[in-house]
Length: 144
Image 1 (tube, one colour):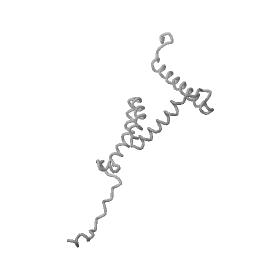
Image 2 (cartoon, helix red, strand yellow):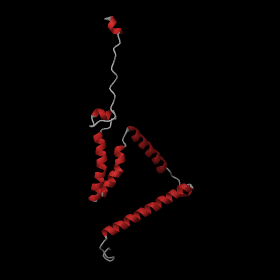
Image 3 (cartoon, rainbow, N blue to C red):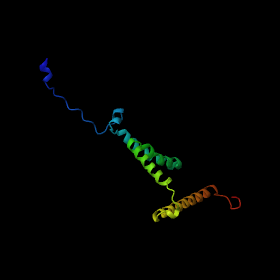
Image 4 (tube, rainbow, N blue to C red):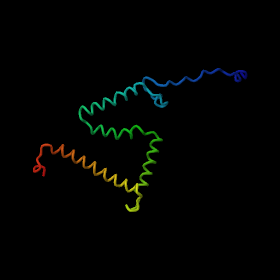
């Protein structure tokens, strides 16, 4: 019996992990193994969604998806921690800054003016488009 303990048994090497699989399984997800069907779904879903949005003029949902996609897709622990750190740094720098306009440096003053001009331009464009859309067949006297 003692002789059997000292005998080394040849072990087979562990099975080599595949680079990808056809169907996604829980094991594949946990081991970060991409599946062919997931890639195919992504490649097909993006143009299909854009076609539906353009064909049926559902641009609101398209814009919502554009804004929501990074929040849904970038949710690893590391990315969440990085986003939290960025937000806290931004909040500390922006909202806790009690300086008056005269105390700002030259680039900071230009940034304030650029932000204000951008807001005026965006509101002007949206006002023009809303007026064109809602007041398309209205004379000037009827509008008020």
